[in-house]
Amino acid sequence: MNRIHLNIPSDLVFERVVRASAAELGSTMGFPRERVEDLKLAVSEAVTNAIEHGGGGMVGSVEVIFSLHADQLEVEIIDHGKGIEHFNTERRVVEEDNLESGMLRGFGSYLISELVDQYEVQSSGTGTSLRLRIFKAK
Image (cartoon, rainbow, N blue to C red):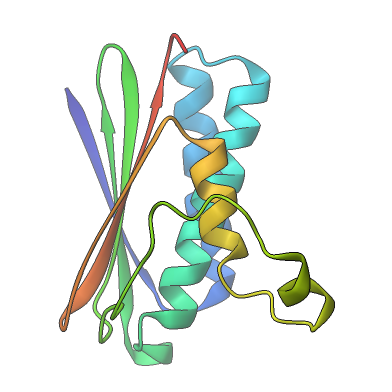
């Protein structure tokens, strides 16, 4: 297994660096183009959430760890914010009423869960960690 660590400032401009890294690694590992696009979007959403909700602002940072295994790519995104009080990992739909009222919160998490094969969230008062996995053979 190989690991690549990125530590980016909590600034949305650096999301592009992580997205490009994910695309390059997915391609290098031999994922089909469609899966590389899924990976890019999932990582982009996760990193954007970490930057926006990680509580660090420009002074904070987000850690991204890519773990390359023979059968999968695992991406862990870690922020050092106040954490998520309650996260419903079973939620698989975006309520129509919320969309119509302009309340779009939770859509990124739903999207991530649909784009990757496995999605885990761990959160405490010192930060949140999202672990995404995409397998070579689905």
